[in-house]
Image (cartoon, rainbow, N blue to C red):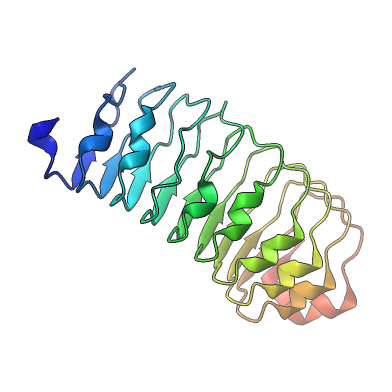
Length: 217
């Protein structure tokens, strides 16, 4: 590993059954780590020591759990999608305060992770194709969010606080179990698209007619 100390980017992808070596955390200047499409089942604990890491792509593996991420405070982009046995976020997740893009689609999550609502710099959040049943009111804390994808879950209701997301441009809620939608959606002044098809909604609040073709039922 000593020869890799000055590396800023490492790409180990599309390698069947590849594993990250122990000692990966001893590459102090690493900023980009691409480790996707490898069928990997676990990560070395010291991946959490990569304090300068900005981009981490772990999509399309077989990860069941993740090590402590609390020291990855410079992380901006994190892709975890398509790890179908991953059911929770790692310890220290709320420390990722510089995170802007988080993709956790196609996992095995049943509850909306509370720690995500503390990541106030998030701009894009993808949680589609999980088993989430509800969205916490703290979703309204994510004031910088522009993209929110919650399609293909088991969500039955959306809190009024969704209307606090003033920078939101695209909201995807199709293929859930919604029976109603909050009238506060009309407060999303920058919204371009809201998708609601394939739910159990019988009617929408009269005020939402202001959104016109932006809302698709």
